[in-house]
Image 1 (cartoon, rainbow, N blue to C red):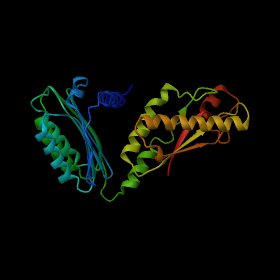
Image 2 (cartoon, one colour):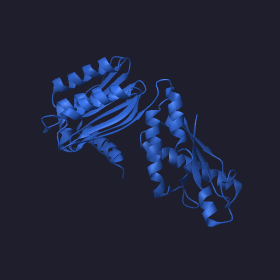
Image 3 (cartoon, helix red, strand yellow):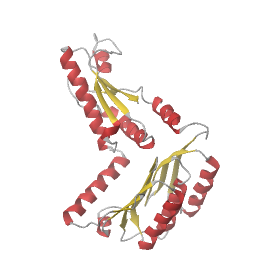
Image 4 (cartoon, helix red, strand yellow):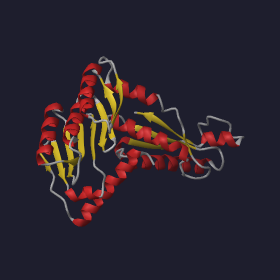
Length: 288
């Protein structure tokens, strides 16, 4: 299971535990900022972690914090650097944090402000950030600012795509999508079970959907020619629905997914061989 998915599952379990214990605070929404406060006890069950997710006009900051003052500083920085964005926070005060945690989390948020879209995580092992930036020199200056505060016991992994400021964000998304959209997701014969080898592609599609949140994605199911035309149409749509459900579990909103089934009408290989039929049992994606 990918580390990103494990983090999502831990977050869901923590929130469920809080709900059972009835430990929650009412959200406050002033039109730009939605703050969700949770109990410090949540961190008794989670390793310390701080995460920042930036999409178009939406910023989410979550995880372990040191104090009310620390949270106030993060929010002030977010409101200054991400003007006009919907800011969502989910802070949990930790019992034990390293002395540099406050500095690292603030500098990480400052680094994310130099990107168009990013996902960043700080934990006890290090910092990882990936995304898209239009100003490489500014990003590098801020990355070094963060690097200066990172001790020898932590790693800093940066995977940033630098793009020409004249290229539209939508064009960048389509270019990125075209890099993997031709890779088919494959299924077991006569079923809707997704082969394990296709799970990494689902992760990549979900990450693409997060980065390019103005796009809708068509999930198109195909079958081999075994069975009746009606049966093949039904199973191809069921497979597309299974993939859409898997993407939803990875955080993709349902209203951004279009589910279609095309049966055996568009083969990419011969249906006369086992290998050909396996290739035809697939899912393809279209950006709309």
